[in-house]
Image 1 (cartoon, rainbow, N blue to C red):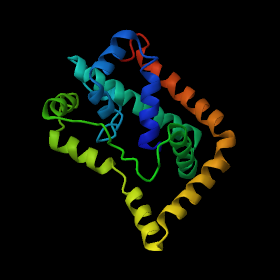
Image 2: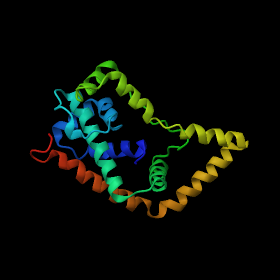
Image 3: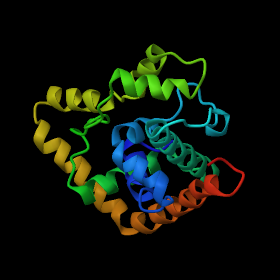
Length: 199
């Protein structure tokens, strides 16, 4: 499945493609939109949720749509875990973000009002369950890798050599492959806005 970094990059792209009213809701309630990028806690389809009653819920739903569309695109294409990591590394290299120090939930701020609004779309989901879902979604791999490098005694040299080599090997064709995959997910995302489908 796509890394959270790719989910957030895809969400950024979709903000430029959504119809104006939903896109405005997502921009004005960015935390709700980014919360949706983490997907549904119980893996149910977006189409099974209640209709949004306010801009916060609409922003959250848009994030869920992005998450679901990207996940489906990844599954249909058979992208492996290794390829997904390469895609993530490629984006981070472009953004000048170090893979070992990126935290998934950087800049994501959730409060009780937002969590209650999001949970209400499910009907039978509690705020506690939603918080638990967020906690589970955080990866501990970065911590494990840093620990291994630290134990080796030459952390800086090892991590730079390893990551730089992988980026160089993959960068030759990653851009085209990644953009093609995201384009497929984008088409799937916009299908939710066809008459009679969802919104």
